[in-house]
Length: 249
Image (tube, rainbow, N blue to C red):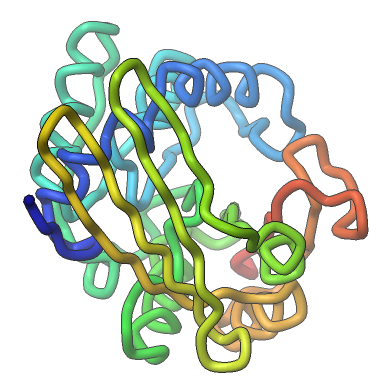
């Protein structure tokens, strides 16, 4: 039996990579970039993909001519991203850095944080600092796009254990609400042959109102909330919680 830690443990990303970053997810990113009005940026824009993982959005953005920087803390994920970039012939700058400290001033026109990659630091002040860093990274008039599973959506989906199969591998995921819906714990058990790998993630979950307030407190001016990449309202039919916020000029 093998045990891994949480999101800061590189073993976690290595062991669970095939469930987290399927080829379907890469294809979905390509499709979203082709059709989403929220992901339509001016030609040649400088884009920061913060918590870029294995380059799900980073690589196709670069392939479309954007000046892209991918930042992640995981060496394993950055290695996969670099390989994918090389295979695609996509020039990308990759940086290994902690989102709590990475904040080159006014270096980007767009900051992306995708697939619920926000809220994982144990101290709420650290998550707030990440938002402030996103604001600092943006040039005046720049745009933040923050994509989460919102608290309202999770309240509909926290169910008994979820079982996912990929080939002969089996993943069982159990979610538990913590601290009066302030946080969520997700316990994962991966069965691969005779090896069992366990991991647990705990992260803060946010409602649209909470996240809007946090963005405004971090210095963003115009803050909009959407329920999907198609720009739909954040209502009972929402699929994601997407915040688009602007750094004032």
